[in-house]
Length: 337
Image 1: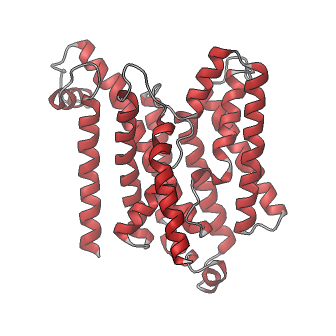
Image 2: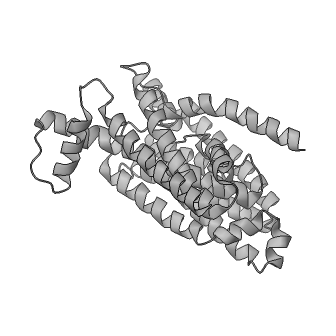
Image 3: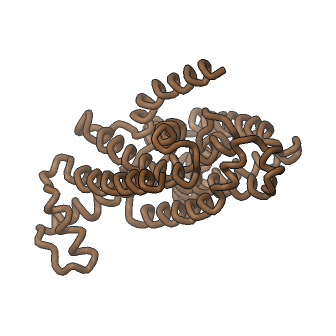
């Protein structure tokens, strides 16, 4: 199993590097993989770039940050999905089950439509604050109801519906047609405004949460047998649950604030990876992250090129792929039952 894990991890890293290199070359401007490597090498201290300033800008300032943000978001959402499914013992759980996405949407709409912050607060900052408020409400409700995992899920559903209703009400009553179109595009998931600051922010959050989750792999393995069995194995259930819920909610909030709500990545990819690695989380988590990164790189490439010159929201493409996979998961669960 160690050799298999190393092969899967190595293969995933190679697939990710190749995917990023090729995805950056795809677009209206004719860019080769040699141009990509030349631009990256020059910006990382390898001397002057041999590319013209315009072509170098297309690679380094436009396509590379967008492609890397897609990789980071895919890795983060898939990682959170794997953790949530194990923690909640629910194969249909995903990173948005805690209402983080709907809270982020409300925060973004409050900034764009209502002008909250007086122009001093960006859309991403508003989305992040909204996501944290939604998660705080979920934690408060679930604690008052007994803090079991079922109560957490039900509280997440309640928060999701509440903030979705607030978002819809705000858009319908306060936004003009052009603003509504822009908000809708963001709500469906978009990486079109990616920059290096967002890449670094999301990558830092991903690295931190990945370390936290890898530090709790044995705990997640124990949760597979239920909370009582985990407690019998010496796991501090309440503490572990709080740490993992907060970590996944924080990462989801950061990703959603930068890229919008990209659904189904955290639902589908953990199941695909689990079929390759088994249920052991020391193998499952890093390989799931790599699978999610490769997946979203190519989904974003498809989204920005399939109806060129228009762009399809990334969340639309992931949903078109994710819904059939969702049905397959339901049928598998029915057969097991």
